[in-house]
Length: 265
Image (tube, rainbow, N blue to C red; front, side, top):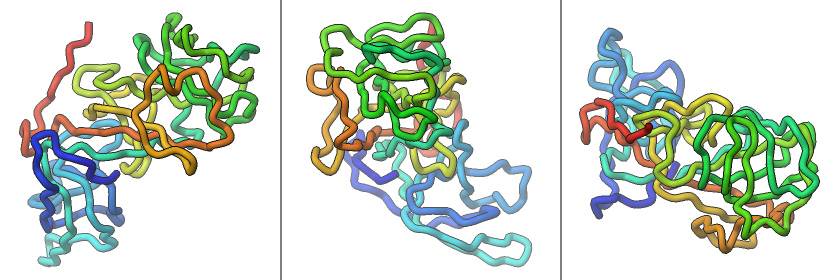
C-alpha cells in the first residue's frame, strides 16, 4: 500500500513508532495496536490481522527487520504513516489464493459461475491467468446482476467483447466503492497485509472500506473503473493491474478501535 491522499486534506503524517512483531514489518504493511495481554505489545505496533483490521495505527513507511524486546529494554522504531483519514492505494492480489475459481463455463463470457456471497451487483469481475484454465483470461465486466451465490452476470449494455470462459478459470471480484459483506467495512487484505484481496467465497470481515477502484497497465494510465469505458472488454494483451483507494474506519486515532458499521439489511 502507498499513501494516496487524506480525506480531510492533510499531508501524510509520519512518526517513528516502537515496533514489536515476531518477524519483520514491511513498507506498505498495515499495523495495529496489539492485545494488551501481551506485555511486549504495550506502546508498540504489530502486523494487523488481514481479515480483522481493527485498532489500526497506520501503514509502515519503511521496512524494519528487528523487533523491540520489552523485557531487556531494546526498543526498535519504524516510520509509520498515522493519518486516521488516509486513503491508501492498494493493489489487488491476483494470486490463486485470493481469486475465486469458475465452476462452470460460458461460451459468451457474459457470466461467471463462482461460489460467492450475495449482493455483489456493481462489483467488477476479472479473469486472471493463474487458474487451471485461462480460456477467459483478460475478461473484465461490471456485475449487473447476481443469481444467488453462484452466477455473476455482466451489465448488459457493455458485454459484447468478451472471450469464452471455462471451468477452472479464476476470477478477482473487485469491490464496488463502499461495498461490504458485513457491518464494519468490509475488505480483507491479502496475506502479508500489503495488497488487497477481492471478494472470495467467504464473507469479507476486515474493517476496511474501498472508496474507488482503478485499472492500469503498461499501455494505460491509471484510471477509475467505469462501465461505459471498461466493462465487457478483454484485456489479456495489456495484463492489467487493479487498485483500490482503501481506508481503515477502525483507526485508533479516529474511533479508538471501536466498530464503525455500514448499514447492511
